[in-house]
Image 1 (cartoon, protein in one colour):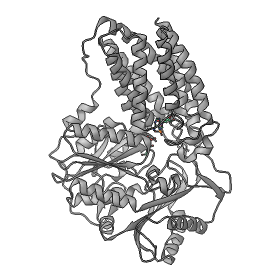
Image 2 (tube, helix red, strand yellow):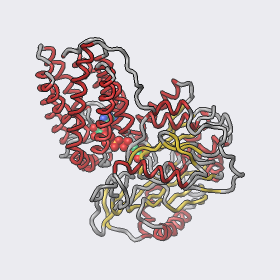
Image 3 (cartoon, rainbow, N blue to C red):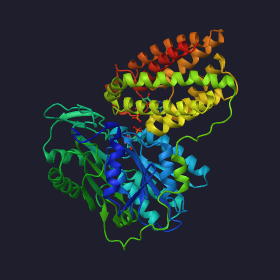
Image 4 (cartoon, rainbow, N blue to C red):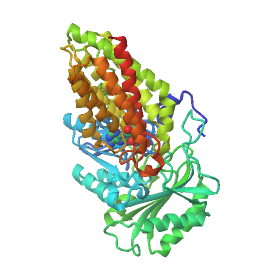
Length: 583
Ligand SMILES: Nc1ncnc2c1ncn2[C@@H]1O[C@H](COP(=O)(O)OP(=O)(O)O)[C@@H](O)[C@H]1O
Ligand SMILES: O=C(COP(=O)(O)O)[C@@H](O)CO
């Protein structure tokens, strides 16, 4: 149970505020997260990590000398937005380029990728690396789809130590790739976490049972077994990891490995030590030499009861980097010289601040017809925010079946911010296109997560199609929806049948184009397409997910529609109401 919070929606921000107040020696706050409070030599590659809140010490607790130069901090279990990441990276950059590092989750991949593009557009060289160490989340033949869990730490650390040695960006990236390829994790869980404000855990495990193959967002395990003794748990973890050695490790005997026994939140240190005692013995029996083991909480999931074991198979170079000193709020190792405070730099660079300022107080010129259409757009976005708010709990429940239960929270945050931004732009006399693009930026920025990136793209595509000049007719709106559908498929890589919102967006766009092609007025055409969308969303219950958070728990999701598909269908129906009212 998460007991101490004020407004659950403010939990992540308030936790970050307290964290920075408590750790000023190491970090200073910037828009979107934190950067080192200590000076970094000019020209050093900046390693910027990040992810959702709810995993402390990942990610803000790992910022400091020898480890990350900055961390972008998202909301609870949601990736930070591209704007947040861009802001933190801009503040952390000291001329050597930026390596963005995160766990391999759809939302993180989308937002960090977009942030890298924005950094490149600013003339800052940026590369990305997603840690994918959790062997339970996909088979070896699909290892690129694996999630990142406690293996984040050794991979971040290897890259950051290489950056600290003054290596150029491409070489730091190669170190990250090598460490990632040699890092594997596997975990077990006894209960899920309870998010701030929620009254029940994201999943439960029957008494005397354990979930095998945990995720760090309350994803249930991929299997269930009888509750083990500590020694049996150690054996399961070690034997499972020894069965999946990296390609270039033929035999564990004679190898050296960095070992992390990680507690997810409510398994305490002495329990971990009881397990570690056996882990160490079993690895020793297998001929593995353990190097600088870590036993403790390094990537958590609120009060989740679970543990995971991570092995990084070391070569001489990786061992040197693993042993290198580090000084961060949550992870310290070896000895470093006295730190120089970062006195030369403004608290937040001007460029970083720019990314965070609210929408500009001026809007591009628009025709009267487009401004009138903007009124309809605003009413539609109001309807979107209302329907999402009314269904937020239901969306969370659907998402919790096989995902992380945050779909309602993220959609509520995004749609509310979009409505406010649209109202601001409309008040300034913006045309329909600008109202939509401002709403798009606000949605992506405030929601983060997969759906934040995708809804930002949907609204941006529509805004571009509608523009600020013409009165958008039914055909133009249908074209905009078709372009939004193409953009979402391009960004997320999902196709029809993967059990995502694409299963609704594509038939909705097709039905709208067909109905407007027949000459139906917009509201009638939209009505017909919304009916198609509702049926398509219901149909996703029969599909097995092939993308996103739900994929490793495919069977569990059979019989339940996809959360993002369902929310999209609800939205299309609500927008129809607004179109009728503004007819
Ligand atoms: N690659 C993808 N392309 C399109 N939609 C996706 C993709 N991955 C996930 N989704 C959609 O995103 C929804 C989840 O959104 P959200 O709750 O923000 O996810 P997360 O918590 O995983 O970031 C899913 O229900 C699905 O509809
Ligand atoms: O949850 C996280 C990001 O993943 P999403 O795909 O946005 O849900 C984060 O906690 C892990 O970095």
